[in-house]
Image 1 (tube, rainbow, N blue to C red):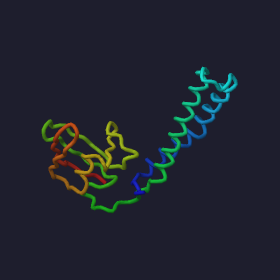
Image 2: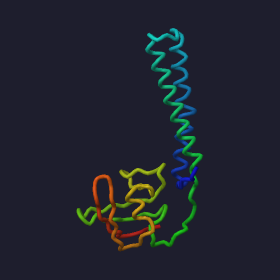
Image 3: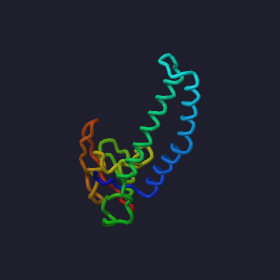
Image 4: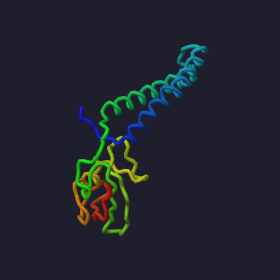
Length: 156
């Protein structure tokens, strides 16, 4: 199993999410399940069937988060030059075709959120930007088509 890089804040966020599911959500779901069992474990007891489904979804979420946390490797410090796109760097890029500029932090796949400026290093755009320097033009083949970006600025 390959290790996946993650920032300290990203790891802390995943751990807090797991803790919330275990300490707050799980007791609520188990209480609902116990209450539904009082009416009998029958095929026509919709409340029980729904509570059981909610419980299995919760167990799956907890297992997925535990697996993600086990695969994470917290990335500390910089192993790259400061003017090269790498994990954890903030990169300002301009879409050559539309003129739009975007500012992204290069992060691991478990903490990526493009709407908030966090781009996964495993995404098509992230893979193309990695290892590039300021002024480079990059052609990215995305599911939406070919896009051209120019790297304007790199910040550690």
